[in-house]
Length: 244
Ligand code: PGA
Image (cartoon, rainbow, N blue to C red; front, top):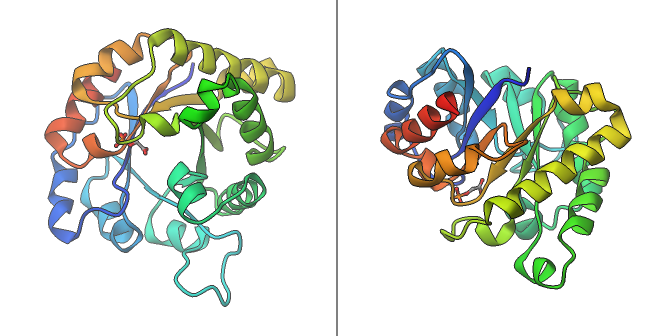
């Protein structure tokens, strides 16, 4: 059985004052709850609520070295993180991260026993010309190294056009992509591994639409940006996932 995962991505939001939100998060027994705060907060966040997991939002491909401003998986693990996002669309756009870099970052995360949440998703232009599944297949294949397992990898499907916009795909569109991802994983890694890997949906998930999204097949949780910043919002999503 795949354990459901409610993952929050604070992006470049929050200072020490916001850590009090973590203490107020619900942690139902039947799901995992994860918050990925900005790197300077990881260490304090890891002390704030023993029942929730903490993750980084990115890591370098190397564990140390002359890379000013970057953070390594070793540093995240040392600070108390157990997860890290790789290949978020904002990294792909803002920092030009290509699939090969995402795969190398994912491998660096595994080296430190971090669970990688590999993010993939099409732009609106790609969807409009019917390229969604081809883009997903390409990103999934080339961002995921061969040693992926259900234990070390989570896949997050985040349509770029749904992130921070309030737009969400129809249930049929989410289902089509999630079923496709599961089938692609089965082709490459075998059914057992594919069935053990959690698939998250991300993009404008809110307490008001969470129940609807979690009713979709092959959706094992959500990666949530804006609605993860306040415990009162994220708790609505956590509760919907716990009940799904
Ligand atoms: P959003 O962000 O929930 O604010 O749309 C999702 C994400 O980028 O992970």
